[in-house]
Image (tube, rainbow, N blue to C red):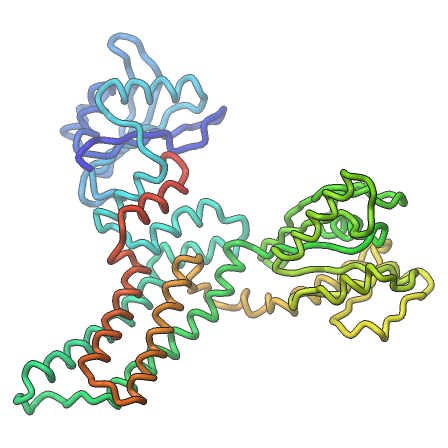
Length: 449
């Protein structure tokens, strides 16, 4: 990390302002070589200066330049940020000059990667940077900022501190048994301490399912046979004519998607092709995709027509529904011909003709996913699969310890498992990591961050 990196940190295009960032030992000297204004080698840190970017005698742009000296910067290195006029040609020209002066084009996420490797932030905080950029709802923003502020990290650090204290006590007992002033650590003492961490960790794991919902949203597949009102339901949720609605069976032949925020949670709706026996090859492909969406969805809405009797296709769909599903009985404004009593599943009655016809379904979804509890929470959760998986691995080791204590396994063997828990929690923070993991994580970042 001795080389100096640079990248455009704003979206490339027409706009009022663009920002080019430089980080590294030569950042100030490189910027000073193309800046006409104050001598940047002599100005104070964390100051902004007016001037021009020049290429020898040619003026490229009028700019404001920020200078931040190490170590009190995002990367813990010298950082220069050039605020120039927005526009592709101007921004690219300034970047070209910086590269010609010796900087290297940064890799995706490399500024944040340097912040992590230099100890400025831990891995939870690093991952939250991209989550904050990607946040599409207010709840997702709150979740990301709590992680970026270190609130989640503090919880994990507290667990690791307690484990470290326990390990130290065990070590003293093993290595210096003659020291009477130290409390004798028995399996019962260990069980008490481990049980506290187990309960707190289980609470975090359960609550972190909310974090996944906030971060990733909820995928909802709308399924059913043709002409039951699937596309109308999608349009009602989105409040726009996203899907084509006709009386002709088989109108929707491919997946139609749309997003909507419901009580601060992002819902990704998928309107699928009507499931039925079809001879048309295009419709068959759409039906096969519909069946795949059922398997990958967090929630399945099976739509039935109140005005029609159940047929064999309806009954098969009902039998194959996953646990997280709702039977939506549509067209309640028409005469009832559906044998409702025969359907022993969660049901909601709606009609998509009236403006408020979709409200009962919205309320049922809120209730099913307990959105009121998520919204009233403090958003202090683990939020991605990597973090949650490591927490679950640590929890599984605690269960192994409890089994070992019950079987009167020696304390020095129990100590090995306690160290494994400590290490797993350290992986969440990035205290231990592999180069491959770090490279993979940061390649998901946008260029310039």
